[in-house]
Length: 287
Ligand code: PEP
Image (tube, rainbow, N blue to C red; front, side, top):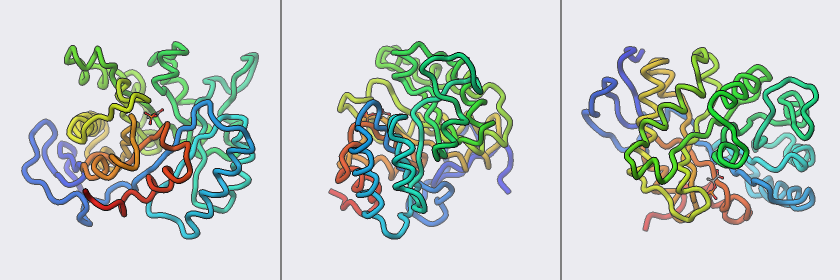
């Protein structure tokens, strides 16, 4: 039993708010608190035919389930067809968005129930493109989280600062505000069903990845924030993914960080060869 004011973050156990006392190697067995997750966000890419092709190749690439939770998020139009291809496999399906209402006069929107029906297990909520291009704010994101959770979908909550906010030294403020307002007193049970993706906006689709140290700093902050509200044990069990120009070249270094439990990948998830390498990141040789 971990005391409530202590936090196990990957390789490290320490009192919340204090620096870690010691670091064990992140790959040692005592660090496997969370199953690693590799998730591909296709955004507005791939026709149904292309999506089916990709899903069949992915299925064939892993005749036995990989050690990591593999998730793909095709566009809405391909979800049903991809679910059929993946039926009985270990690959899970995510939607890229949902509407906060259960049903009604919301032209062009998709409900949580519809996503469950076509076979989604996960849903991405609050992606920075939704926040910046479609005006989604923290309150709406919170309502979407609640809707997803009550439909038994596991939300992947995306948070992260813009370049301006980072340069002004506001990364911590922004991340903590997004957590506070996005989660907004969800109960501990709900917290155990969601994943968090730290995606610095300046790294998304730009080819500019956060360094492992930068990413780890933000991930530890997120884990400590969760520990402060929900206890160290809950925090240790929360999957915190990094997103922002992850590729087969940089994934292994990122995944070596104790608080990085996985990756949410856009561009590099579109090509089957590159996605298969991302899933198998643990066998990419160190350079
Ligand atoms: C994303 O869209 O969530 C993302 C991280 O994109 P990319 O990997 O292309 O930066």
